[in-house]
Image (cartoon, rainbow, N blue to C red):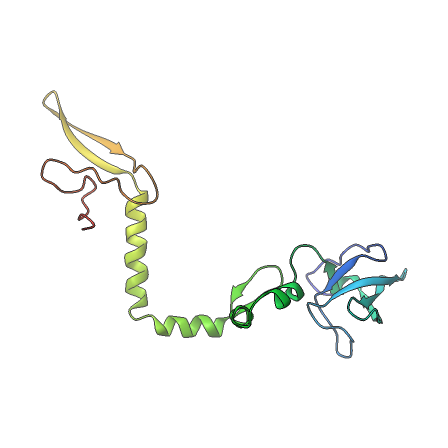
Length: 172
């Protein structure tokens, strides 16, 4: 049994499952899609290759998961060579995460990455935070909160002096 992973519940013969872990000497490959050919009462099953119909050795249920959704076998046949190459930059079974080595290389390619991230974060935060606006009401100074209309950016209402209401320079 795999530590930290609960074994899937046994399924009926004829159900397709995906191999997610193999032991040395297993005739299976991780990601391989097989049909359950035989179920034993000891928590194991035998898989049948979909392409050839050949029945392989025994696996336990913790080494497989029910095949739902789009699998790697389908993607490999449907994607171009360029698409398959792009996928090699990622790791994961259920979701994709950029490989650390690829992430490290990307960080080196972007000049001034820290400054760029901080600038982008400041811009996003400025758009999302409500702005305080001061005005005179019957001789008293009143501060009110004005929410941006959308997360897409500030509204472009110009005041009398021709500057943007949010204090940003016009985009032209």
